[in-house]
Image (cartoon, rainbow, N blue to C red):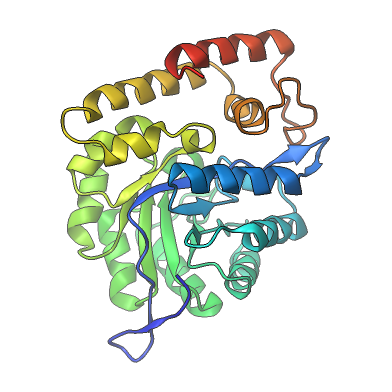
Length: 305
């Protein structure tokens, strides 16, 4: 995953990203501080279950609650513990281009294969402005960039034609993560970007995305269960039932304020901590004891231990 290929314009061409399941990782915390042991255990769990890449500092990683220094430290911690053969694809999105470039350069320097970035958020922008942003980011940071389409959170959608425009202006477009829940948009990316990996960002749409030509899935449940990997690799006879179980799990998680259930299940399943403390960053609150026990019981009805 390290090493650039020469592109047709005399510049660098983005690395080829792996096919399969990418984990948008939780940010492991203990008593409110970054948990190095938790990061190591999480990466070992991902290695054992066949995840192809780790994506820290995404939506599930609560990047928006990290200071600039914490954001960089998180990426460094993942880079220093990354298992051999697993790609590092950190989120670098910040509130302005200068800081985003700063984090992206840091990720490049610690060995990331590519970086993931949402478009500028809060205010609505035009598609040409969004395309300019990605071209400037890739050029200034000098690392392949993965476009992250999540309009329900970023407030700015990225049309497939816009992604194609970015690709026509820079060879550093490495891929697209589409979390819009719009399968027509995902199919549009696949059609508009031949040869560029497109990943589905919603676990319950993973099998449908596979049928539409997606390169893989960015699945939050892979922080604590191997169901996404099993769906992705299953044959036609087994995949629908596995997707049904994964969709049931997603419905269970949706009963809780995002992303507290994901954080608790990582602590309980991967770390073996039934009563963890300080595992949610301020101002977010962890699950109360009763809710945590109910969640774990319901989880075990879907994924027996």
